[in-house]
Amino acid sequence: MSHSTTVTFADKVRAIPGGEHLEMCYSCGTCVSKCMIQQKVEPDYNPRRLIRRVLLDQVEDAFTDPTTWMCSACDLCFPACPQKIHISGVIGAVKQLAVAEGYKSPLETVKVDDKLCSGCGVCVMVCPYEAPHLVEKKVNGQMDRVSLVDKNRCMRCGTCVAACPLGAISRKGVANPDIVKQIKIKTDRTTSPKLLIFICDWSLRVDDDLRILESYPSNIRVIHIPCSGRIDPQMAMLALRSGIDGVLVCGCAPGECHFKRGTNVGSCKISLLGQMFDQMDPERGGRVRFIQIGTQDRGRIRNEIDGMLESLELMKAR
Amino acid sequence: MSQRPKLAFYWAASCGGCEITIVELGMRLVEVSEKVDIVFWPCAMDFKYDDVRAMQDKEIDVCFFNGGIRNDENEHIAALLRRKSKILVAFGACAHMGGIPSLANQYDKESMLYRVFDEIPSNDDSRGTRPQPTTHMKEGDIEIPILYDRVKTLAQTVEVDYSMPGCPPVADQVWNVFQALLAGNIPGKGSKIGVDPKSNCDACARQKGKSSQRISEFKRPHEVQLDQETCFLTQGVVCYGAATQAGCGLPCVKANFPCRGCYGPPDGVTDQGAKLISEIGALIDTSKPEELNKIMEGFVDPVGTAYRFGLADSILNELKYK
Image 1 (cartoon, rainbow over the protein chains, first blue to last red):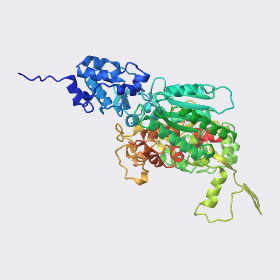
Image 2: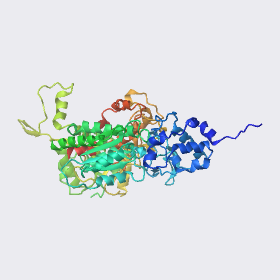
Image 3: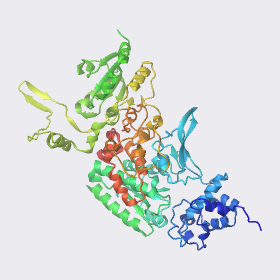
Image 4: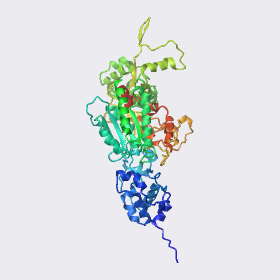
């Protein structure tokens, strides 16, 4: 009797760090209930299906299914999994094999404008997914060092878009000019303080929160961003200059960020911006705020907005 | 009568470094002076304000004006030179963006004077002395300029044709600009001159940051032995290079000191300080979110760091004084 030496799809996945816990899944589906992709983008999303495909050697199906590429490794499912499977690790291993086989992510990614990029490497350092790297490339007939984004890694959180000092990176819909355009929309004439809210599309409570926001009159304006890591303090400055009284940025609770570190990035930027306002003009501090809304924070946004409107009202009256 | 182009230089609220950069041209300055007439240069030549007043309007071909607008004399001469010059260049960081003196825009005039005349340890004057615009002497009244509440840029005061950034602009760029203007190579109005495309990082040869290489502790340049080969950001030191217009040739970086941002915002950046914190904020990283505040404390004096050379020209300044 001869032993089979065929290496299965599952063997290959297991061989990659992160993929080793494959068999432990007993398909309870708790991960699906936690998954933001399933809730917001693709109702049919189901990590269990991918695991099953790996075990059944359905290589082609696993590699070509768009949902394979959607996981942002936020790891909300990990603490919930009774089997302690790092599902994002398993999915990451499958992606890695797919890339090695020449498959490509179907997701749209951020774009680098080579003519603007100075090759500073800031995007390389800030990206939660190690997607950008620097390459030597011919730009305008000359060799130049520029950033190149790995399509298979980029999850389009926009952290690099905001961090890029030269505006060389853009993401469809939330490039700098898109946000400036939204800031510039004229508001109704109103005496009440005007508040601009940047809200993370992936915030766990965003749907509830948007319903609450609808109940406010037109002095509240909302701009959607893919992650609070996308916030550029310049945009808050431009908003205040255009006559808006306060800027509130809503990110996610630490550990609940869809893009790993985006909420920390947003929090640092707005905190530093707030410190600058306090230093420059202490009597009118508090015009920018960052809040982190977590699973437990049902309805909290209303209190935050009311509190901020109240302090802006006082500031205006002074 | 000579048909040579007429140049003027002036210094308003500045330290004199911009004058040094002209002198730094060395023998090239002699070459320039053979092709032009220098008609006004208070730092180096004996002309008076009355000489300028006596000129025809637009008689000066190019006036290089350095220094911000800190008092009424600065403003008066700015208006005079504007009237007498065909081309007015905001020369150096102070004229361009307010410069170091505009950091005082954080404070009102009285607290600034209190600090200077009463509070600083080296000043032992209990009489509460304040500079007076007019002092009566037995020979007659003497006057000093009236100090303004804040520093303004030249462009916030009069119409400016070009800006030439730098604290100071480096001599080689001054030379380039002289040659271009003498050759009649006049750029579009409002352009920045004496600069290179993109940001300082474009020209910087240091090893750039790697994936996920971030800042978990800020260090100030004097607190650390700086490596000469790698990007300052990877060493936890705030370097302004990525958010600064290229053109200086990196004298600071080559002397192993991080860029301070004196060449101002590159094209596409509306507020240099806000852009800097958008970049630096994204670099702060720790596995423990509760440590973020402690890390940020290491970003000492956010306004002074982010707007070291450009507070007067910032949106932050505009929001305070609107």
